Length: 478
Image (cartoon, rainbow, N blue to C red; front, side, top):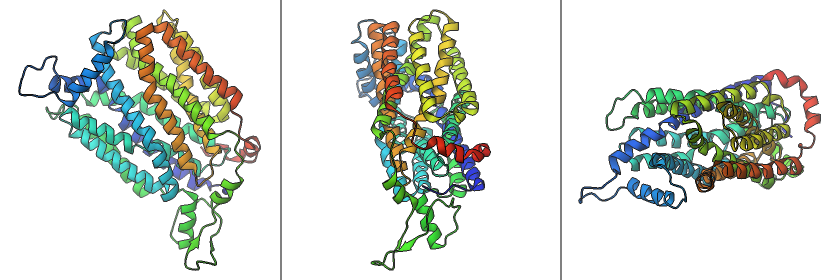
């Protein structure tokens, strides 16, 4: 087990992680409220309702819309044409998540091998390229390329979790994971509104959303420079190598001294705690079960999340502004809970509270008839947002040694992104085929299965309670 990080270093690194992740997520959420208008702009430009010009071949966007319309026509109940853009946005969102499912394990494994700092800076290079393509996206093909590059290179969240885990003892792990959740809640509360406001400032007619994209690029570049100058390496084996070489490092003392191999006198062989910890690590929960829980939860939660605007429109005639206020309320409640409650809860208890809240919310959404019921369900979903993923990240980190942590957290994220990529398509299909009541009831039954796994299959990591008592003096560090 690694030696504890000195409080000054830990606070400094956590501050860097928090600020950089907040910048990244705010930049990421700019585009969320713009998808309908942005895709409508490209559709009117490249895929009008009728191709009257014989010398123009169908564009990439025209082909995609053709396939989506064929899918929409397969449903028994008619689907209003106003959902065409929503379906296209959902397809792009699923593409991004599926690309993340492919890239996350690779990014995590590379961070275990080459260091968190280097992997994060490479990831940021891809993010800059992605947003730069958005700035230049005067056609849909360029915009699609920007989303593909972003999906393959986005590694900030999982690497931020890995860094925070590197510098936290097991007793501090839950509260540290809650900081990541707070970043999400703040970003999703204010980022979309700021992005929508920036979109009203049109500078380049060829790309009406260039102002938003340009400011997003500015934030990502600032984040990259901030990380380059302020983030030290936290991977224990790399810290140990730097110590041995005599290089200055913001070390946390998490590695043991280095010895030289008698067979190779010129090569330094670090004896970090990662090697001994990985061998002696006693796993309480299998990574497969944790990953399966993450997949199952996000499969149903993301499906519900994507279908919510359809449901509020059908039942209450909600427009984008009223849906924005509803989601803003959920983000605000989740942020308050993560800052005051979640960070103090044991990870497993946090996950259990979250899945039960999600189950109740889905069953409630299947039957509500009033706005009051809608906001009650939204409050339960805010509890879910504040607890489940944060707790699963903490539990996964407990089951990984220092030398494999990035890869294990990357796998957890990959399984979750797979659920997030497939969930909206499956859930909305049921919604349109069978109706709201059936869709949300089936979603509730799915979350019930996930809840049984959480309550009957997962356990509190061994020794966590003892370590919390030993590290009680560190609780005020955050």
